[in-house]
Image 1 (cartoon, rainbow, N blue to C red):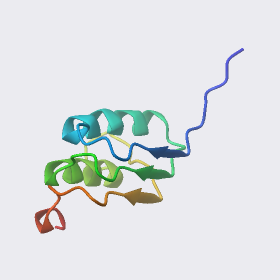
Image 2 (image 1 turned 180 degrees about the horizontal axis):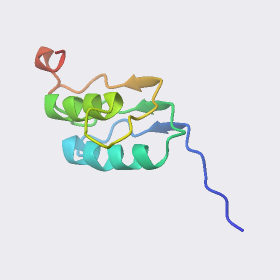
Image 3 (image 1 turned 90 degrees about the vertical axis):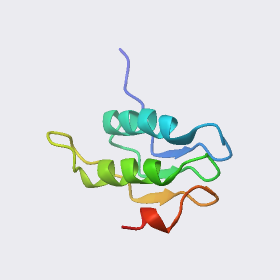
Length: 87
């Protein structure tokens, strides 16, 4: 018998090559593992596009797609995230 692991805290900090492509993979992981409550991705090369992808996933804006149940998100030290992603 195997049990599913419940991933509550995920830190991918200081992986500057992760970028927005990695965010896409991460979103699929988070949708599959709904127990994750804290995601830490500082200094991972994320851009405004990656922030938009995360925001859409967090809010469940994609039709037929459940939202992600994160409680905390750390995205500091991503130099390509600008004020453009605030909206």
